[in-house]
Amino acid sequence: MSENTYETNELLHQYLVFHYGTAEDQFPYTFGGSDALDFPKRCALEGPAQEAGLRQGRALDLGCAVGRSTFELARHYQDVIGIDYSHNFINAANSLQRDGFCMASRQDEGSVTTNLEIQVDTSIDRARVSFEQGDALSIRDDIGQFDLVLACNLICRLREPLRLIRRLADLLKPGGCLFLTTPFTWMESYTPKANWLGNGSEDSFDGLRRGLEPAFTLDADWDMPFIIREHKRKFQYSIAKASRWRRI
Image 1 (cartoon, rainbow, N blue to C red):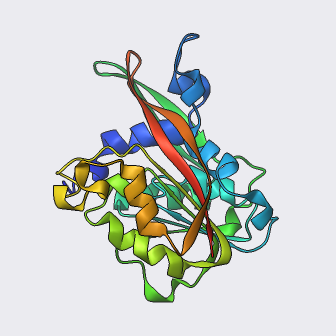
Image 2 (image 1 turned 90 degrees about the vertical axis):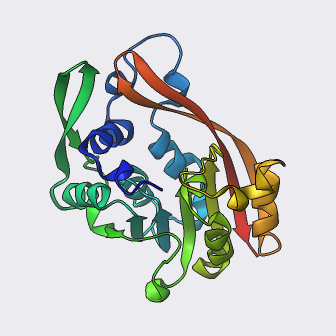
């Protein structure tokens, strides 16, 4: 995997808009795309079984990027930790946790950009949230167990996805909720082909299921579109496979 990909300022600002931008900032058109807006917020608020939170318990957001899902989880959980491999992303998330805002640059066309003030919703208690730079394949041993683990669009960006999948049972309390999304965009630059779930020749979700069972049972699965703005006339529209699991 290219270490620089998620450390560039270009990608940092792209993700700040993806996570915190208004609908107009994310997709300034009245046709298409609107069903895919606010993906990180939807992951936190629609994906987990919310009855497990009720403003108590612990949640872990793996691959948190610049932290929108992490902050949204604080509406329902007392203690939320966000972990991401990118130092640049975590620095921005820590700035948002400390100050409640930061500046982002929205790409418009060519060298034309628009400066935006990115804000965390003031109704969220930022004191419930902390961020750490770290590797999802080497989560610190003393991190403890959680009522919820969220890992959105992370699986197909790991060198050894099964290594994380097999660790998840240890991270969740019995009865805890696991929520995953992934577009299963396998690329050898991130994941050696031998490590693709289903070996690249079967349905990847079946490979994910085999990795999680029997420690987890599947509650539900569905499609979740998301859109990432590159500039005002170019967007990445993808469809993630979402799945909610219960720790046995």
